[in-house]
Image 1 (cartoon, one colour):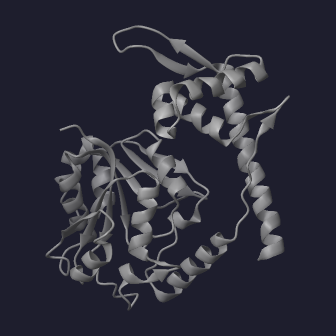
Image 2 (cartoon, rainbow, N blue to C red):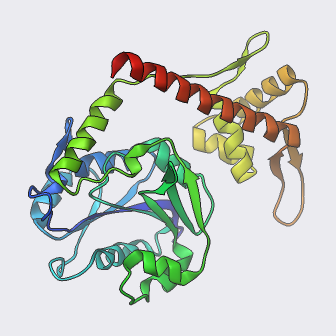
Length: 307
């Protein structure tokens, strides 16, 4: 059986004892916490989603019955640790996915952009990081699951990961939602504050022009995917672009800049590949830094006027 690229595990087996209310069903806007996490994963292209149930399992199953997810029950939820729930999901997905995203029910406001940035990254273990602090979801390569699943120490998933001695890749994201926990009523209020703030926000779309606009968000995404996957065809597939349209965008960029941004290497045992030229990679990095700084400046101006 061919593995799908990514799957996800949502840990929803806990007692919600510190919150007092049952966390999966708490509403943020029009959706419950659990629905919001599922929809975020699905919007980012994750199709194989596992929900680990425990406390009030029937309520959770009823809540997600129309969302095309799989519920797995931790029968010993009251006496086991979160890592035991993690293992249930990992064993189920081990032979179905190449990589697995893991998140607790407590952290529902990470964005689809964060998920997509994680899935575009390489590494056995990948952490999203905001302002130097690691958050969720955490991504793990299934090749290392045999080592993870035999761990019996008392440090849970963190201890299992550390025992494997692989580098943990950190991916910086402009998404404070990866850190905001809904473990208590006060923390849940902070989540709601972020949600309503996000409903009204500025969006900067930076483009570079010469005689006409030739480099913007779409072109940046295309070159980034080529840089990661070394394939125009694969990059176009991820963006739902035709192959000819992708090359048309590349040719337009090269015409306006006056230099090649990609280089096609042909032949060999593994076939040809397309990589960014040194100048192409340099231009992409400059654009990404410019876009990031522009958004940061606009956010500061927006907050002065609206918050």
